[in-house]
Length: 130
Image 1 (cartoon, one colour):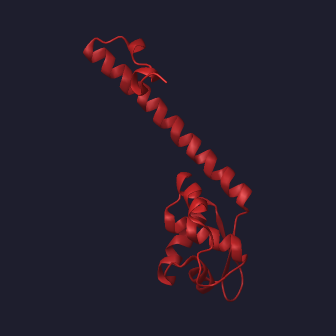
Image 2 (cartoon, rainbow, N blue to C red):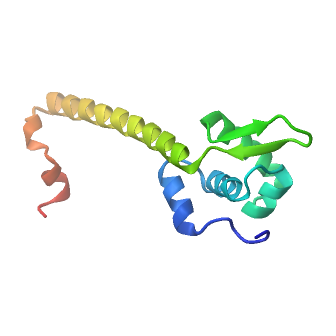
């Protein structure tokens, strides 16, 4: 329904957890709900100002979550939610793998420069015992 957010906060939270901004998530979910839509409809459904929707749609296109349809007037279509989530999860997994690798390098560097045994740093030593 126009004038109400396309999705609840939990849906937006899932997508932001996967790397989208709040406004990107609102626009993507609005487009999933509306199907093929013009910018005006996307703006009304997502409750994001129309002028901002243009740049958000462009960023979602670059990510691969939105396609521009060749039509007059121009309309946009969201990538199916299953494909979108799969793609976002792959990106997040790659990002976390990279961060994990950098964290291991940091640990080794710290241990070498401070004469600390790397085995002394375990998950339990950071988190405490469960």
